[in-house]
Image (cartoon, rainbow, N blue to C red):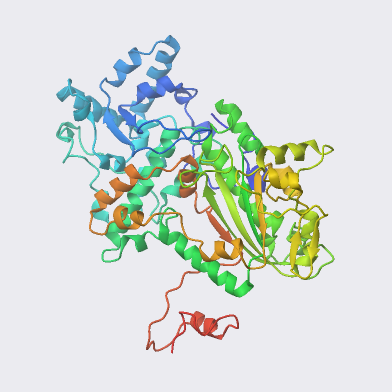
Length: 593
């Protein structure tokens, strides 16, 4: 199915989701035999059975990655499965699709279909255990052509081919595409098939998959099994590749670029501490938790939902990407204006962002900001809202402000229930702003004002508001996103300072010690993580789309550096600048000589 609207760069450029379509079939390239195939027909065309683990879905939320995806040869041949279809129309379409796929030289479908027929010929009565393929079968070149033949019309579109043709892989491993050591049926094959060729260079499985997801072709984003397969393939490749390529280095350090590891967030925490040393104590700590039933969706998301026949929370890929993009740009643009600070064009700079001092104020009140996207897994503590634990992404932001009085927070923030004259905002507050334990603000019957002596905002917070535990929020922003908000304001003491100083990843020590075991083989490590780590769909999606939609964002550039060693002949330039900066203390760990 093709998106008829919102597909051109001009139409979709406003949300920054349009990417190159190098491997994506255009409408005129989709053969008639593969159009409008039902799920029953696609299942009948598959020579393999897919096992995505036990079906688990979080309450009010998304599906859980319960196990690594495994495969097995189907008990029946493809022609027999087609004959078993109930509807005559489905049988007719399935036969036409099979005839096209078997003749299509660009696809590897016929290769897997031939191997399936050979297996059934030699083992017609094989049970499920014998039909099951080894875990390394996920690496098979062109496997997607056999599992999703209506989406992968050419072998070069397959993520398995992108993986195997990456120049970073050892050339000797590229030739080991057969499963002769474990299947036993390869000796009966007609002969080896040449590996598809791609342009030489460094290829990315994530980028290849995201190009398809954000393309005009509807289908890549609606199939959970395809998301599950790609996630497993990426994790399997990354864990095994880091284990083999960085021998002698602890795996926890080799995997520090992956957002699911503690080392990734430790580096970001060090950057946050550096930011605090440069900017002083943080002023605001904001939390924003979207609710899909009320969150404003872009027209391209609604268009895809209508074409797929899905409702909210039933199309996780577009929903998650859209929410992550909105949350990030809402913080970087609408609140702080950091997304346009480096541009030289005055017409592209934010001058009236919410935390700004107004157009008449020359100096920007926002020094910097830090934010991260997390997931409402609900596994560590009781949620303050009944819908917590469904896996939806939400944001945490820390804002560093100066001359806070000019921001006029007393006019922009609220910690009370709106009057009956504003029914929309009143309904949003009563439904989403009532905390389970406390409001976080003291009782104050007077109007909101700025306390010049204490340098903090004093919000109107009546006894009724305190009894109902109304959290602070920005009314103007809540009307836009309709999210649950929580705003804390401080002077460097209490919750804000504690948050920054203890901002560590939410992982146990067992992850680095037991899962990323340096003594285990690459196979054991990958198997352990994929079977025991159970993320929900949004976390899987953002781990694949980390380059376009990073889970951590900040003003400026974060550059992890290795400190120089004692006795170094010539110090790098960044060390000289670091030692000469005014905000650095003499006791900092990077001090040398």
